[in-house]
Image (cartoon, rainbow, N blue to C red; front, side):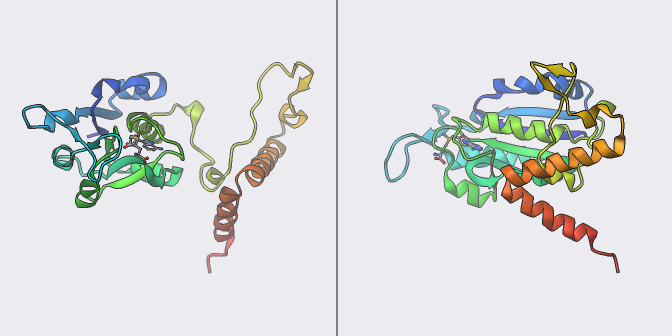
Length: 239
Ligand code: SAM
């Protein structure tokens, strides 16, 4: 089966949403990947189909019930041997390395929280991997799931056209990207850097590399040290 994103949500109608368009949407139509949005509420078996309850210990908001979430997770795991991720602001920050691993596997099972999130016992009991898409709080896991899936889908072989190749993503993938320009050559008094008009591929390549390095050094010291470390490893002689 193609790469599959199985999403557990209280709002299945939010999918495919933006993923039904453009690159991901065309790939979905071509069956290069599959999306299954499953309603968590289908696993709420009590009379009122309750999915949440008040927090133990008091306080505001509601907490998603462990029995309902566990039933949804167990059903989702049947027939898809993929990692189960709980989108959560407390999770490990999602980064390209993990996205790449996920894209290389059979797919992902994604649990989208709402309210105050899910009961801790189901995170522990079902060994859910918590991932965050950034240090900010969304009102639900769905937009985070859309981001993760979008990032993974573009890495699936055949999804990107020749024009959008993923080349240069070895350790240059640790750098922020160099600046882009297009026509006109001069706009509001600002010129496209001369080197980009030179037609000299070697010089263009070096210029882009230097710009990427400069931007990363200035803006993201964290990425910059990782880049230096990996570059150091890569350059060590094989003997
Ligand atoms: N009470 C939680 C806290 O303060 O950590 C916030 C819960 S949030 C309002 C509801 C749901 O949105 C979460 O369960 C999670 O699924 C999702 N969510 C919010 N921010 C997120 C982020 N940065 N990354 C991934 N998921 C997020």
